[in-house]
Image (cartoon, rainbow, N blue to C red; front, side):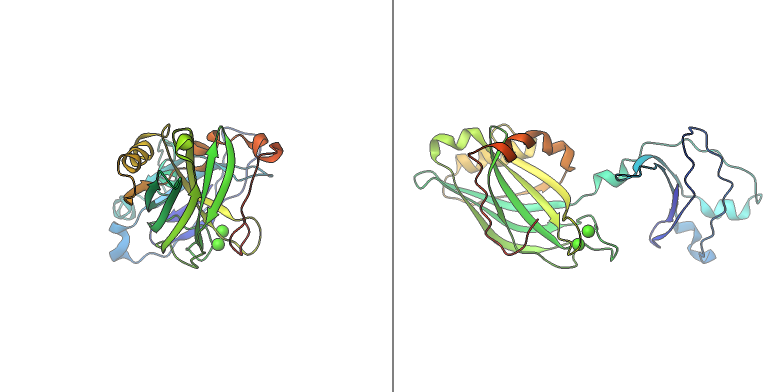
Length: 258
Ligand SMILES: [Ca+2]
Ligand SMILES: [Ca+2]
């Protein structure tokens, strides 16, 4: 269980209770909050399932927002609240702005990564070190990838960098591009912040952007995309195919690894 007072980012964790659905904690947590700020603060409870070998799963959350009422109320009286599904954390991964431009005769697609805003913080600093990785996908196989540079310690990076793919005109309807915004970490694996996907068979905005690109050859078409979790997009890439396929062709064109 963890608690957080919003905007203060004061966070404390409770003890782990094993193999139970009705845990009793009886633990006290204290936060220093000035009385005149109490009305604008929220107490955020998150209940997690502890996993030793992977990221802890969020069971649900309770947000208490009338803290001033409680401070004037009757001290230690217990309060019961229903735990609701924790969706707020998932929604805010950020947005990515890029343009797509296709030259049919040359068979060249240029994705220009312009900027990202409100990215999720993936480091203890409260920021991320974002770079953008675009992968060309055909039949579930990752054929090529291109990356931007890394912008250090920011949640609102600007790139203006072109990522170029050679896609013959006869193949343009059967490919898609998965775009991942990554957090570079000097220790451990780089983390996925969020993803989006463009292509003829992509969802909503991803399909519209692709169609607008094809309808306007040789013109850069710019669009904002809401980032979604990796597991939403990951199903479009067959993991076994990327490692065993002899057609796999990875182009490493930037100095950093992922
Ligand atoms: Ca990180
Ligand atoms: Ca980082």
